[in-house]
Each structure stands twice: as structure tokens, then as C-alpha cells.
Length: 73
Image (tube, rainbow, N blue to C red; front, side):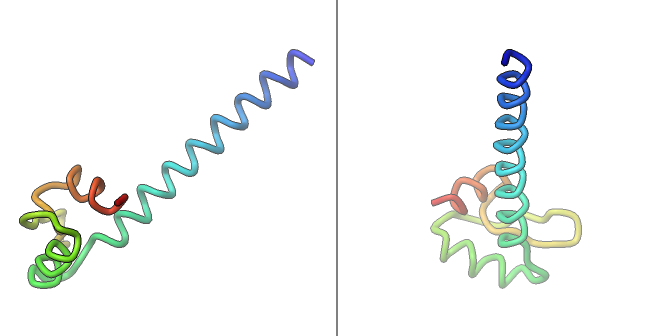
């Protein structure tokens, strides 16, 4: 019984971790744009200020941390 409980807790941990990871990826996909103008428009829609660049894509809000906050609203 003890092994079952420990395995069950580990399964719950992995499941919750996967949900958080999927949420992060989904937020990232919804927040990247090829043009500055599209990122600025999305920034206005979200209610945050500014845009920032991440590699070759533009993202709304002044930084990625702020973007994730606004995407979860």
C-alpha cells in the first residue's frame, strides 16, 4: 500500500507538471508574431504596454513575464 501511495503521488506530480508545461507552451504560441505591428495590436488587446523581441519573433508587453500574466487573465 505504501508503494502504491508513493507512486500515486509521483503520478499526480508529473500530471500537474505536464499541465503547467502545456499552459506555458500554449501561451507562447498565442503570443508570438512576425511583425512589430501585430505584436503592438495584440499588446493593446491584452491591455499591456510595449512589445519585445524574442529571437526572430515579436511579442506583446514589455517582457515575457508580463506577457504570461496578461495571457492568463
